Image (tube, rainbow, N blue to C red; front, side, top):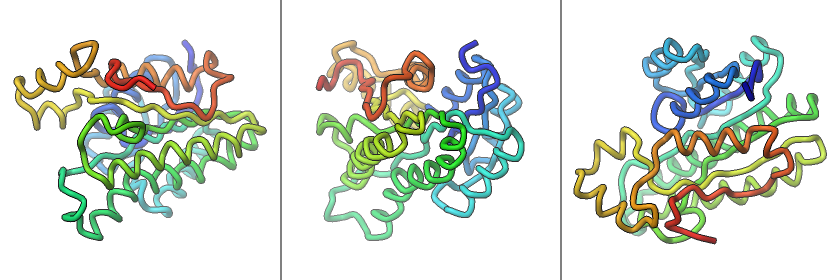
Length: 245
């Protein structure tokens, strides 16, 4: 198994892509720390996969510090960090976005990536090894999908942060990469769209379907694996060909 006994931290782990990532790492033998504010969801995931639930708000620096300290106390190291937490609740024009919503979306999607990365870097530097995989989005790469401007800005920020930290941390054997998914058939996506709407979205994708969460998880595991040991500062597009850069 590719990740036997490696310690993996996954944020936004209770549902969607995060849940699929935890499942995939657990199948590969990893010791997984699953972070989310959804405590019941985490507990169900822990029962299913053997991951350890760490209820935490990754937008709060004190929560992140405490959780990473708890992970280090339990296992003594962090080999992989997957910054998956993120999302948005409503599409609205830029002029209708309230100040507090702008701040909240950037904090959830971008500041959380900074806080978690900052927390694990000292341990990874001591180890002289580590993998950080950040979840960006197709909207951070190109304007092919209409969402909302604060989410697009945050996901573009994730890409800039990824490149900068890759350059900073590379001399210590740490790789930092991003994944930019297109539309993914998460629980939230399926709940909000009819089958007809899903068909219309898929019709614009060269592969004529939206991604499954497990397919994004496969890409995460690749970038976290030894097979990607010479890849850093990269953004891997996983969008079925909707955007080709």
